[in-house]
Length: 265
Image (cartoon, rainbow, N blue to C red):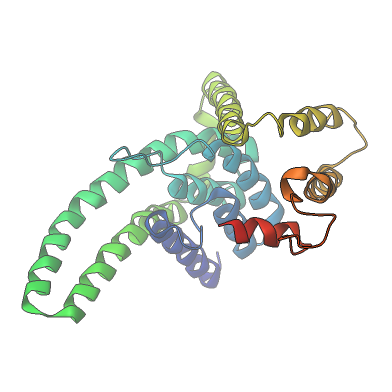
């Protein structure tokens, strides 16, 4: 394996681990993490297919209060390495992602526990007025989260391919099949959560229309996306809610529905 590829994979893993806390650039999201691993390993299509499916599963994962959700970063990085470099197929990667996410959840709780001591040390430095030390301690805590993903990724890369293949082949079919079915059910739950957040009487008609259009076999995802954008623009153009002052002089509407919505806030 090319050392340059190994470095890039570890870098993506490190960024994904940090983004699990930062949530700034979303490198920990499966659709991004798996695609990046696929690109650096020369298998972008496999990475994208895996990431797209895992993203639907991860839609329902979120941290609420002190509750820590399954870790999408480790699930994405580890399964992407297995698929793009270790010979596993996409379905096997999806089946392995769930237990990997649980393992990542345990790891992130462990690292967060360690960072409690770092936070207390930062408090002490703040009392001393050493702001540079506070910055370094915060960066150190963040780097621990990056290493939380980079180290398991390095271990997977270090394990001989034959051993990984034998391990994958040793997984019983009933287990991989059960995990695949469970993953499909979690996808449905993720969809349901997103739809529930968007559910209003005025939008249900679009859901019904999309459900009907999905049965048309000639329409691919790109065509469905274009239809969705066109319908959204038509809705903004003709809906009274977005054109309340239109049609006469002295209207407060600027002629652009999106501008009018933003101006209301």
